[in-house]
Length: 231
Image 1 (cartoon, one colour):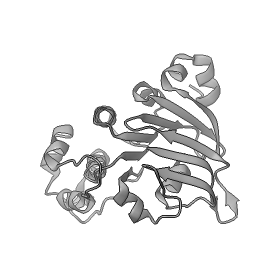
Image 2: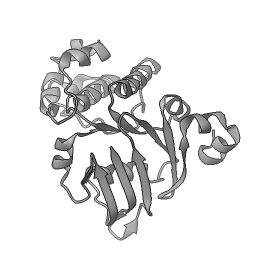
Image 3: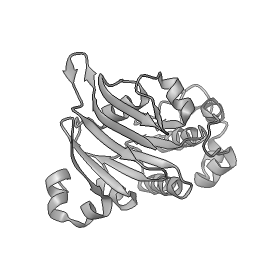
Image 4: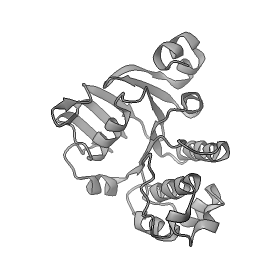
């Protein structure tokens, strides 16, 4: 579904990614872990065309998207849940969801399904987003991503700043994506929780991939886990 081959991404003359390669299969949940500043968010931005790689290639659904603009990548079926939500604060939840609705070749979701995943969303529907809590904004952000009919969803710190109950809702949503055949690439600081729901894991440090393997293997190997992610 998604293939990244030896990408090198720069901010000005400062190199952030060094030959990063990874892949995500259809319906697979892949965790991308590592310390702050490791290059995880830059990897997502490189996929989305927000920080296009200077070298290497990004392919999605069999097509080279390395040089495509972000809006074209989104229309192909790549959805994003950014760490700062990025909803339109003066618009209602309903309007934000409407703006995010797209049709791609992948499964189409509807608003009733969003309410089944996040029942509280129905009560937020007519409210302006600037009046909402962080957890409520995250519901809107995830629902908007799903209404984009994605083949893959890129999550950047989806549990950041959320109450434990909302974190469980978010993890349950990621599991549901797998059941629906939708892939997910997830950057997450709550590493243990993410390893429990992931199929595979990549660990980054200083712009390099330092480890690739089954999430269950890393979860069950305390020595390796402490060496790679410190827990």
